[in-house]
Image 1 (spheres, rainbow, N blue to C red):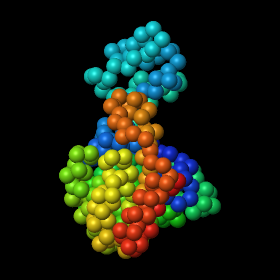
Image 2: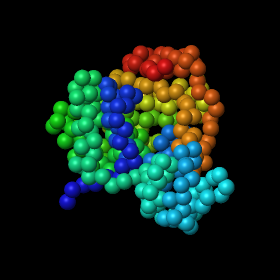
Image 3: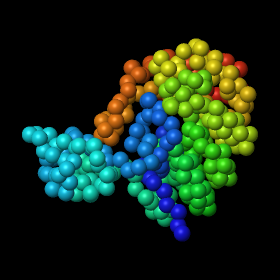
Image 4: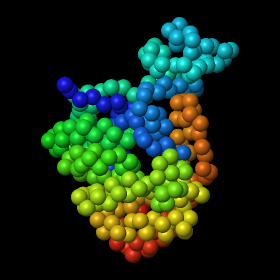
Length: 305
């Protein structure tokens, strides 16, 4: 039986998820619940109905097919989420794209067809495919088979993961991944639990093991969240955790905080938590330098300005 996976989106022509021009495959489902998550529509394992009110043209087609959950109230179309079964019939008939479904079962062949559309661009730019999420490694068998197919076609492969998965899931993809982007969000275990719902002991253990088996293939990503993990004390804690494996890393990337995901929260019916303003260029450059100094320049700490 052919494997299938629950895919939220397949994004072509990405320039920020690995070298060159890339196709990013976003998987549904994540065991963490980070308060600043940029892809809230990928957290649930189930389908999500996304409603972008600004795109609604008030045609009434959703009301016709599902009057229990869609009503027109004056100049507004209201989507009543309570009791919705996420069948997606409303999105199927929406002509403007105001209603869409996040999460569709796709076969290996389905995903490969999308990836292969840009083979020319991969070859010209040194790009390839990146598996992301959510947490792609919760669907590890599919990831393994997909990456294997890509490698056989000469496509560069990368994985974005928070590493909050069983080690055996990671082991399955190691032979077929050219690059790992691994999140390490907060160094302190209890603080990590406060902001993500889980402590980071499994994450760090997996990162340590991965650094031993995939030397030079790992970029640790630290999303810099104002007043959460951006203090000098946090830098000390990150350095303490990462110093023992730093020589095996390809780099450490500091990600600027931004609030661009606010509209996604609104579209998916979730509450958005703001952590304030993004860091200035000078602040994030200073953070990189401080962390690199603490790690005695054993690994490059960088950011994209």
